[in-house]
Image 1 (cartoon, rainbow, N blue to C red):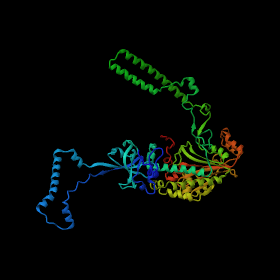
Image 2: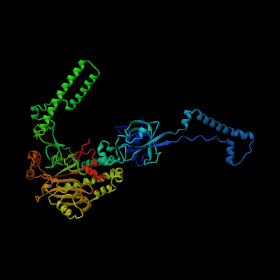
Image 3: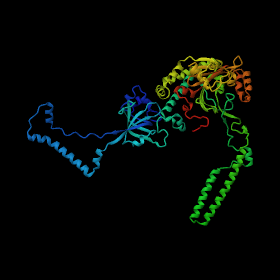
Length: 624
C-alpha cells in the first residue's frame, strides 16, 4: 500500500494499528472531506447498501467535416462560386466514409464478428457502495469498477471490504460530498445472502436478539454502542476530575451485599461425584466415554458385520467383528446400569458440603460492590468502581436483566446530602457530555428512535430536582384516581417501577429524588435516622427511564449495624470484616450506584434495556 508521506499524513489520520483511514476522520470534517480530494488512501468497512450504475458506450465519431475552406466561408456567411471539380473533391471523403460504414455493417451481419459485437454491447457496470466502518453514523461512497472486483460479490449487504483508492468529489448524488474511486481491492469478505440474518434492512430489535453477534453491524446498535462508549469515558472523566480513585471490586464474593437479595451461587460441586457415589461405584471417575458414543459405536460395528457378510469376506474377520460387537454391547449394559444408579441417587435430596467446594464456603456473584468500596473509602477518601453486578431475578422487566453494569461511588466524611449532590452532579455531567460529544449519533437516534430524547437530556441537565420523602410519594400516589396501578400503594410497601415512573412522568414532570425510606425496604447497611424508623437512603428517578441512581449514607455506628445484621438473621461471621471498619477508625461515609445501562436508555430513547446491552443475560435466555 502506497501512501503519500507529506500532505496525507498531515491531513488524514491513519489508524496506528490497522494502517487504514478511519471514516470518522474523513466524514466528520468541517468541509466534509473536500480538502482531501486527490489523496490516495486505504479504508475498510462493511457494505450497507449498493447499486449498479450502467456505463454507456462512447458515442460514434461525428461525420467528417466539410472542407475547411467551405466551413470557414459558411461561418462567414459568404457563399463562394465553386467549380464542379472542387465540389467533387470536397464530397469524396464523405462518400468514402459512408461506403466504409456500409461495408462494415455488411461484414457484421455476414461474419458475426466478435470484435464488432463488443463495440455494440454496453460496458460492464460500475458498482457504487455505501461503506461503514462503525466509527460514525455517516458512510463513505466507494465506486468500484467491474474490472477490479465482480459486482455480485461486492454488492451484497454485509460484505467486508478493504480498498485502496483516490478521494474525489462525489459523482453520484448522495449524502456524501466525496467518494473513493477504488483502484485496488486488498480484501473482500463475502457473505451468504440466503443465510446472512442482516441481509434485510430495518430489522426489529427483538428479532436481533437471536443474533447478538451480528447486532452491532446495524446502524442503530452501532450508534447506541458509540453513545455508551461516550458515557463510559464521561464516567471516568467526572470522577478523575473530582479526585476519586478507581478501585476494582470482586465479582465473586462470600457476602450478600444487600442482605436478602436473589443471588447467583458460584460452585464447582455440581457434576462432581459425591463421596457416596465414589464408594458405591456409581461414578468412580474413570468413565471416559459416554453411553451415547458407545451406542453409536455399536451401530457402526453392526453395519461393518453386515458388509462382511455381503462381501463373503474370510470367516476369521467376520468372527473377530462379531466378538468385538459383543464386548461393546457388554460395556453399554454396564454404563446403562451406572446411569440408572446415578439417576436414582440424584433424585434424592443431596446435601452439599461447601467445605469441599473451590472456596471452602458459599460464594456468589456480587449484587453490589459498595461494601468492598467502603474499605477503600475509609483509607483513601473517595473512590469509585465500574463493573457488572448480578441479580437472579425471575420477574420480566424492560429495565432489569440478570447482569447489568453499575457505576458505584463511596465518599468518606460525607453524609446523605453530599451523596445526593454528587449523584445529581454526575448525572447532569453525563447528559451534557453526550449532547456535546455525540452530536451525529444524537441526530440519528432523534430521527430513528425518539424525537424527544435530546430534549430530555437537556431538561435533566438544567433541572432542579424535586426532593420528596417516601411518605410524600405514597401520599401523592394515593391521590391518583385516573390510574389503577398493578401493585398496591400502602405505607411500608416498596415503590415499584410503575410507581416511580408515574411520580416523575405525570405528577412532578421532572426528575425526582425520593428519600427517608422505611428501614425494612433498604439494605441492612443503610444508616438509621434519628426517628428509628426510616433510613438515610435516596433514589433518583428520571422521566421515561425510572430510578437511575440509588444511594445512601451508610451506618458507621458499630452497635446499630451489628443489631441490624442480627435482626435480619444474616450470618454475622460473614460480615466481621465489614464490622471491623466500625471497630477501628470509623467515619461517616455515603455513596450511590448508577445503573449504567439505564443511563444508556436515557441517552438513546430505547425502552428495553436488553437492546442496549451488548450480550444480554435475562431469565431463561443466554444465547451467546
